[in-house]
Length: 89
Image 1 (cartoon, rainbow, N blue to C red):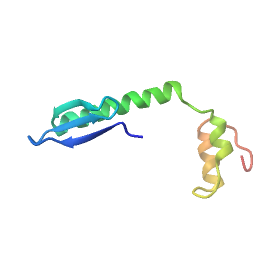
Image 2 (image 1 turned 90 degrees about the vertical axis):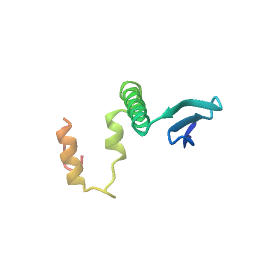
Image 3 (image 1 turned 180 degrees about the vertical axis):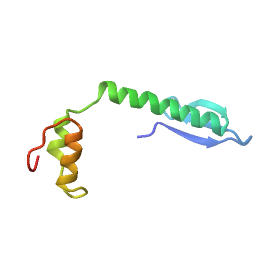
Image 4 (image 1 turned 45 degrees about the horizontal axis):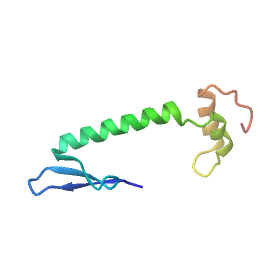
């Protein structure tokens, strides 16, 4: 669920309005400034996921099915990841 939205201000710049505080969190942003904020936010979220929310590797093996990839392709990827592959994983 998004807790903020972006609007174009009458002066042509951009505002980020947060529904958490029901007020602007950033305003008078250029397009470049907004993109920079998005990149910084994405990096923070990516680091949080990598540091705190990883799932066990076995989940990928258990949940694999051949709807979008062959078993042979998956076995190759698993082998590259460092798992000894037996016929049919």
